[in-house]
Length: 93
Image (tube, rainbow, N blue to C red; front, side, top):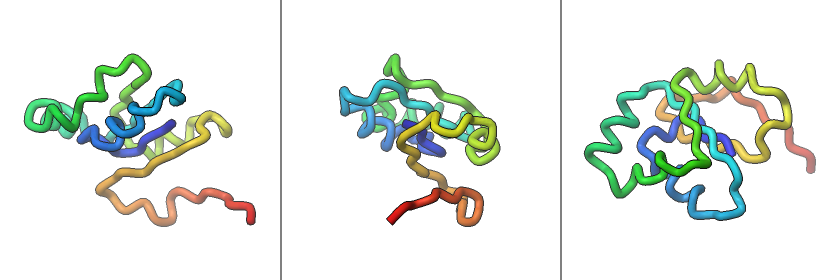
């Protein structure tokens, strides 16, 4: 699972509840969001210590462009920055 944004840890907490999830990568643009969330919202930011989690600080869209196709079967965008037009996911009816 890839989470773009999600620095507060809320989405991470919910994804980590599922034992079927083997790996969770988070691309967060602002490390300070993670640090502040851990300090002031520890009940929300509990998942960052999960061994399945890898946090990468940087622009999620730019980082995603360097990820090989098929790396993730689920991508969750929890970003405060509007990403319309940057991420296009093909959908087959």
